[in-house]
Length: 258
Image 1 (cartoon, one colour):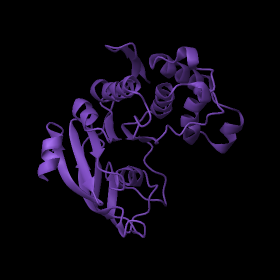
Image 2 (image 1 turned 135 degrees about the vertical axis):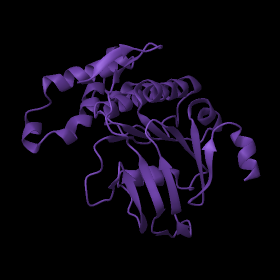
Image 3 (image 1 turned 120 degrees about the vertical axis):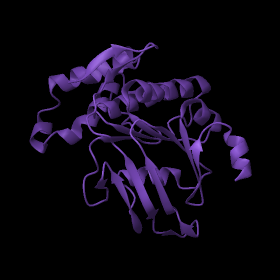
Image 4 (image 1 turned 180 degrees about the vertical axis):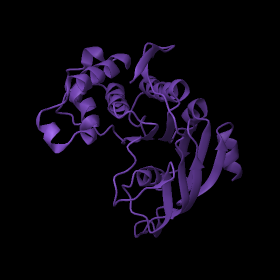
């Protein structure tokens, strides 16, 4: 059962109770050789992310940030190494952990559908083929509407997402992830293409999910200032390797010295 409580902003987000810690463990993971880069995209990555952390993945284009994020949910084949979520090995042959949700770059919305229909798509994995023929249950529709309402999008619930602003589309994508009731949320460049105000709004929403609900957030960013303002920890990649893993304070100075 999901309960709701008032947050300090205009949004209310669902409170989720956790019983077991959810950790992400990457052990010397390496992807196949990339001819474009003349190297593996990921080349021996090892790190561990604990439940409740807010982690920013940073680095230049081609460093491997998005590939690392996608590999956690089994979307990228590994040549070697292991990724575990809550102790369970993740790979392409099995369904990824249901307690991990991903916010794809650009939101990954179906722009011909309304906002509420996009949110409900997050429930498809929980329905059998037979159930899907009958449409979504009423309680799923109520939850989708409540999530949009608490993300400030009640008035846009029945608008096609093609007509929403970039910031609104990202919040629809966040609602779609939240309806899966995740313990871990992976966000691939959620502020790309957004203006300063919209980017701040999206990052504040993620920060609330982390601080108020205990959801682990791993987000790919290019902006060091955003990382320093919202994340607790930065993992910086270069040429498929981790060159820094630590606090977000004074990142420009730290990276100059690396």
